[in-house]
Amino acid sequence: MINIFLEDDNINVKVPKDKSLRYVATKTGASMEFGCRVGDCLTCIAKVKSGMQYLNDKNEKEIRALEILASDVSGLRLMCQCSVKADEGEIVISYGF
Ligand code: FES
Image (tube, rainbow, N blue to C red; front, side):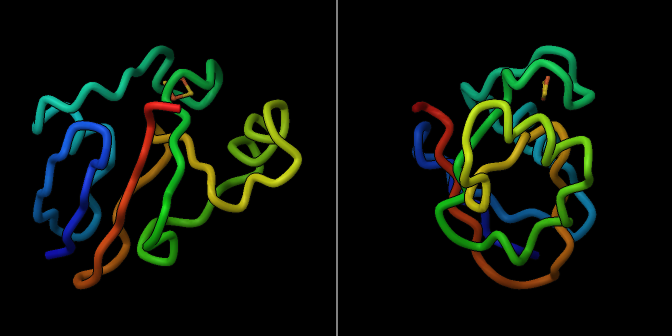
């Protein structure tokens, strides 16, 4: 299980590999918001403050969407497109910016 800290809601949760961040947000009652849920609307943008290496890689669609908002997208993710790819580690996410 990997530890995920949802900073804006002060939620700490252990998550098994392959779970989506949308599932995590829904199950924990986090205030993270979702719209389209398919990577089009950018509602679920978040900053991964640490642990990006424990998430699935961005696909081309997500990269293109993020680049609409920022030139440096290295720390940004769309939560509806993220899932956990590791069994151990810690991820810190902020989404209230
Ligand atoms: S909910 Fe629309 S991009 Fe994630």
